[in-house]
Image (cartoon, rainbow, N blue to C red; front, side, top):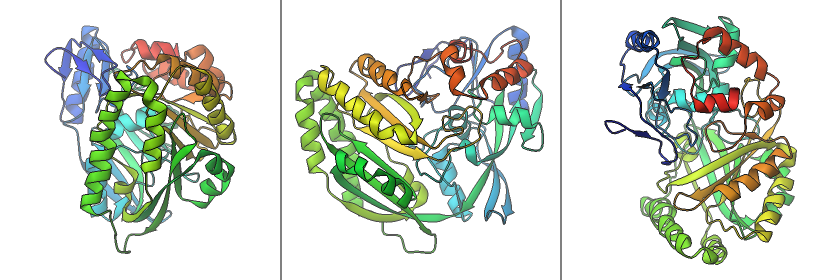
Length: 438
């Protein structure tokens, strides 16, 4: 943020807040919220700005939690083994994960980037992949919130359970998260096997891939039948690491995946008709690699090429048909897409506003380079996903509204009731929340 304007990472949402606050204690956070309420200004919190939606935008008081970071306490647990770790809400995942490792701990599952704050990741429903694992909110065991009247409240399954159920993925609508207590597991390594393949073969064996691998995902190159599969298997932390050689890692993860990929997209922007050929060449150039590293270093990858993203959670059993329908639409349209389609998986969970609530889920994420128009492509994918009761990621682009989201979430009205109870004056409201919550 400069002195006047805030923008998200993707440069597709911005705001001009009246005031920008950076509290460094929970007391200061409470004071800022109370002050805003007294002044009649709305409040939104912002983390790393990695949401593509304007979920954090406000013309009132924008609060950054960047000065509210670090681990507060660690309480060992035996069932499951690991520990309950309480962290301040502004803690970035890229800082939290190494700190946990030094304590012999890890988060059970993570997304594919680690720039977010823990509060931002929870509030928007950030997830990883793995048919036996839930998203980050599923790992939350307690929260400390600052409510609209400045009150600081603790909540969990045992204490203020209704508030806890709503706030685990609260969209910033219930209160401001000050602290998060996570159920962490014993530190573990992962063996990563990345290999090129065919979409048709991957879909034919999808059940085996998903059930037989701890964390499976794949990337499909549109306009081709080619994919890159990723099979990540959990290993004990005392095994020897065998990371990608630094030179190869620099070439493949930095030069090819970021520098060269940005150049490819610049060419594709100028010559869209070349994209199918470019995708075919890129996919054929991929080679197999296998390595063992600390879990968080396998989960997350650097993403420096700016893009727009939409992601839909569909019932796991519908993912193959949904991808085939997207492929059919691309084949008959004039739209070309250079970015791979990312496909991941998650176990059903009980978090009220989770996109995986009540059903085993597959995630289909589509991207478009930030210099190209994404709307026709995203609208088409959204229509296809809605046909199988797809649920949009709260932090990624979509056009859904409260009226058509309500039937997809059995706890939607309960969530709204909790919001009405704790923020009746809509201190934490903004245009995005009016769109998705009414």
